[in-house]
Length: 229
Image (cartoon, rainbow, N blue to C red; front, top):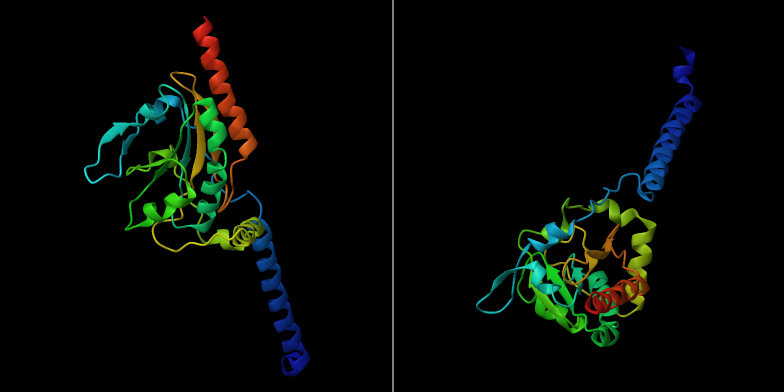
């Protein structure tokens, strides 16, 4: 048992433990930056979206079925993760940049939020050029709600998104629930269906604006084709 009295033995042991912990941390960091632990989104059916109850944010709110948003002309709808989040404000501003083109196509731009906290929606609206409605049951974030917790803060992509939004001059706050991931939908008029469904993979995972415009253009094209018939 003489080796127990050898200081180098303990040094080597501590070094091995440290190296093992470092390796485990590196592996965890690597896995956190893959899609291995990300919950897979479940596609929403048109019937599911149609039946969602939404509320207006007026003093005397009106409850209505979500299908009213797109029934006549289709719609582009942003399911906002958190109105005070600077990443969500960045995406809202990006979508709003499409408003002139959407207006030409006759397609409205809307947003839904999952809670109405103090002045959060009011403070969000300078970034978003469309009406905002309340989805109290968080149906637009389903059918299977997905969350990103603190793992998000060790993802390289999330930090890239942080710096992109900061450099763009966006700021925000920490008010409200921000772990349930949002998304963007382009829904056709009538029964045309869901033409684009973007589900946020991680904080700041924005929809491709060109894809939004392409899907919106299909609404108009399909509407004209159905009228000609």
